[in-house]
Every structure is written in structure tokens, then in C-alpha cells.
Image (cartoon, one colour):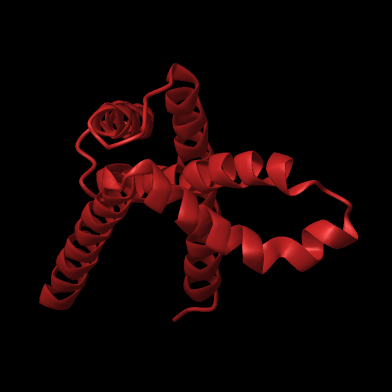
Length: 166
């Protein structure tokens, strides 16, 4: 019986470290001056140039969309990680865990935009907080769906073993 608890603790620790790493990555990017941040975005845009050219998408339009999608993706991962962590620590209902994950992701987004106020050449926008929060909600939804699928699979496996007499 000791092994499952140890396994759970390791998983909990790794999930907690992943949350911290994700937040550090997000806030680290917000600390970058505007020119450095734009250069990083341009590097990604350069990788996507062949695709954009084939789709006849102007680079100016793509640059803004790529930046917003990057923010949304970062926060989707964060929402998924927060949800996973809170579900593991679950001392309340699942809905409380998901609400808590959303609240923590929203606070992370607010701090993220506040950091940008102090980064050279950058500013803060309320729309960016909403984009980040929408990304987090997608991640939270993904965590909920994955958890549901996992439970269904677990139930099927358990039922299969119990009905076969093992």
C-alpha cells in the first residue's frame, strides 16, 4: 500500500513544479523589453513563413494572431496544470477545483499584465487578460474531459477484472 501513496506524492510534486515552471515562463516573457519580445515572435513567424505564404496570409496580420495564440496556449497549459494539481489535492468538489484553477489562472494573468507595465516599451491591456483567461478555461476544460475519460477507462478495466474473477 505504501507504493501508491509514494507514486501520488511524486506526481503531485511534479505537477506542482510544472505549474511553477509554466508561470516562470509566462512571467519571464513578460519581463522582456518590447524589442526583445517582438524579436522572439518574429523568430516563430519566420518558421511559419512558408505556411503563411501558401495560405496568402499577410505577415502583419499573422504576427498579431500568433502572439495572441501563443498567450492563449501558454495559459491553456497553465489551466490544465492548475486543474491537475487541485484535483490531486482535492479536498472539495470537482467544481470547486475547477473554479479554483480558473481563479488562480486569472490571478496569474493579472500579474502577467501588471509585470508588462514595468517592462521597457510594453504596456498592459485588459483584452490580453481576457485572452489569457479564455486560454486557461480551455485548459481547465481539457483537464476535466481527460479526467472524465480516465475515470471511464478505469471503471471499464476494473469491471472487466472483477467480472472475470481476478
